[in-house]
Image 1: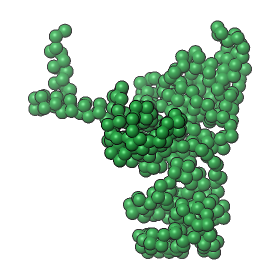
Image 2: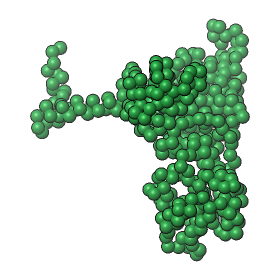
Image 3: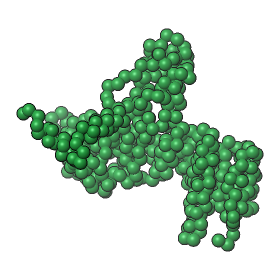
Image 4: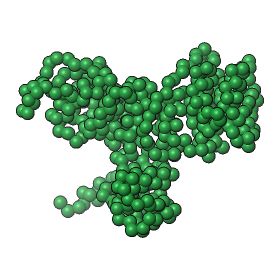
Length: 432
């Protein structure tokens, strides 16, 4: 390396600037720092800066504006943003604008050095390859996905990157994790945002009607088809089609969907004329589609066409730190929607909510808060006001019960005997 790589740290907190400088100090690395966004622009205009680490809260303009201006004027300079509590929109927009990463301040001690070293290595690799980056444009959005956990922020970053493309996206995750919200975020941050997004549940509509819903039908195609009807692919031409529970799509419809993904063409039910539509597909499933392919329930070729980008939503129990934020968010929405007197969740109630396993995920939490508001007699909500409904199994509880049963059987089986063989023998001994 001929010249030392240069980092510019931008933040209003002088103590933080001092800490970050010492924390990142390394041989052949030059570290500059300033406490003002305008000064940062001037430094980058007069000095070759490889990496900027900027706080989201700056003067006289914020970190997103600084990112935009730096990417326009100095596209080869990478930018990492830091924030105390970055919002959904900030994380997605920062990623779209071309930020290398956006880090929560509370995790800087553990993450900053690794992220910076990775960025600097990428810069060096890019120099060696002689490539350069292009500026990205931002789009506005009003999508609201509540959560500040690292797991969810990783989702936001993928949304920000994939939204710029037309690649099909497969959103996986348990029921109630917010897959449709993510699909809307992908659409609203994409160049297609001025056009329509339409959602359809593939598992809730009979096969013959689903084909008609998606691809339309000609007059007389079936009983009740009294006129020609455009399907969803025609209705959202230029937009996004969200196929929820795509793992439940019947095989004949899968064949027609595969053709649309391949060349954008299809025929209406009962028709012969080829139609063409420019639609971005976002699919969602709570099933393991790879396993469904192995079982013969889902076409392998369609799976690979859909799974260009896979985005997995973590269950709520895996991001418990988001539960208080979500609970208070749903409480505000319920109060506003129903015009009821203000209420507040006590610290004990929030802790009680955090300790629940939430097999129904975010949807269960929303319903729980709605029930609490409907039944509460006080304006301060306590653990005793919270009632959980268990109408389906907790996946983790099922796993734990299975492991406990296996441990019991293992103890009961003679030593040196394979457990599977021993269980089979015991089953054969049962009365017919």
